[in-house]
Image 1 (cartoon, helix red, strand yellow):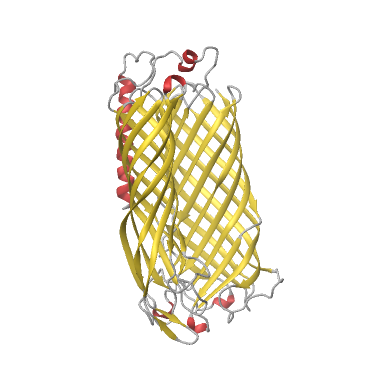
Image 2: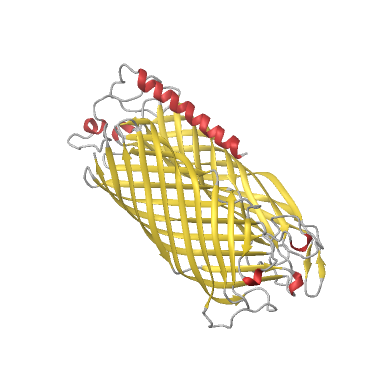
Length: 567
C-alpha cells in the first residue's frame, strides 16, 4: 500500500512539474497584466499529513485508562474541481481522494485491574471527500484566494482488538475490523495563483466519522478466575489534516508560465516595494521558539511468553505523554541560481512536565492488569533536519520544490514517584515518595522525502509549507527500571515503520530583509510491530530472550520565528 501511495504521489507531482517546466522553457511572450479570474475547472495533486484519533467504547464499564488510539498519518492523492467568481467572491465544488499510511495502538477495554484488557490498533488507509467552497480573492490583481469548505467525507478504517498477555491463551486472542464510513469535513485554506495555468494551496481539514459496532474477543478475569464473554465496542474517529496541493487550471493558457514582467504589486499599489525572490544566490536564516507537547510509547510483545503467537499481544507498555516542552532552534535556507537549494533546522529543548503510565498484563503474577503512574522530570530533547532540493516552479514571488534529506530526534528523561491506579494487589511507592524510579533515552533517525513551497500573498505577507514522508525509521533506546531488586537496563532497537513531518508558517516582512512569523509543526515516527525488540542487559536478565516490540513518538506545537534574508 505504501509503495502505491508514494508512486501515485510522485507520478502526479512529476506530471505537473514537467508541464510547468516545459511551459517555462518554451514561452516566447507573457500574458498582459490583467486581474486574475478564478472561474473554471482545475485538476491537481496533493500531499499531506496530520493527527487522528479512533475511540473505542468500553462494553464492560467506564474505562480507567486508554480507549483512544492516536493515529498519525501521511497521505497523498488528487483533486478535481470547478470555480465560479462573482466580483471578489469565489464559489466552487471539489472532489478529492487520498491514500493514507497510518497506524496507532493503545490500551482499550480496561474497566478493571482484575480483567485482562486489550491492545487496540487502528489506522485509516483511504479518504475521499466532496465539498462546496466559498472564498474571497484579494491581494495584487486577485491572485490570492482565502476559502472555507465543507461537505461529506468517506474513510476506510481498519485495525484489530487483541487480548493482551493471558499466560495460556484461555480466550480467543484477536478480532479484526475493516470498514468504510461516511462522515463530515470542514476546512479552510489559502490558494495562490502562480501563473495563469498553475496555483498552489495550503489547507487544513477536520474530518469526523462515526463507526460500526466491532466484536471483541472473550477475555480472562483474575482473581477469581473466570472467562469474561465476548462483546462489542463502538468506534468513532476524527482527523486533523494539513495538505499542500498543486492545481492546473483548464481555462488558462498552458504556455504562459509567468505573468507580465511588470511588478504586480507596483501596478496595484503605487509606491509599495514588493519582496521579490532573487534570480541569483540568496540566503535566509533565523531563529525560532517552539512551544510543543510530546509523546513516546514502547509496546513490548508477549511473544514468546505464555504460548502467544500474536506479536501485537502485549506483556507491558510504557507511555510517556503530556511532555510539554520549550525549545530554541536555528534554521536556514540557501538558494542557488539553478533552482537547487539547501535547508536545515537545528534545535534543543527541555521539559519538566507530563505523565508516565507503566502497564503490565499477566494473570500468573496474581494480577490481570496493572497500571502505575509516574511523573517525568529533567527532560531534554534535541533535533535536526538537513535537506537538499530543487525548485521545479519558480517566479519572482513563489517557489515550489521537492527535496530529500535526513532527520534526527533524541530525548531523555527521568521518572519520579509511582502510584498504582488499576490493581491494589500490585502496589508501588508510598504517597509522597518521589524518588527517581526510572528513566528513558531515545534516538530516532530517518530519511525524508517531501515538498516545500512558499509564496508572497501580498506585498509583505508570505506563507511557507513543508510536508515530508519518512519511508523508514531507525530507533535506538535504553530503558531504566530502578525499583526492582536488581536494577534493569533494557536495550531497545527498532526499525521499519514510517513517519510524517509537516509545518506551515505565516510571516510578515517588516523590511525587505527582516521578517517575523508564526507557525505550526507536527512530527510523528513509528517502527514496525515485529521490530528487532528489546534485550535485557543486566545480571537479573540472565536467560531472558529478546522479544518483539513496537515504538512510536510524536511532538507537535506552535512556534514563533524571526529571520533575515540576504540576496
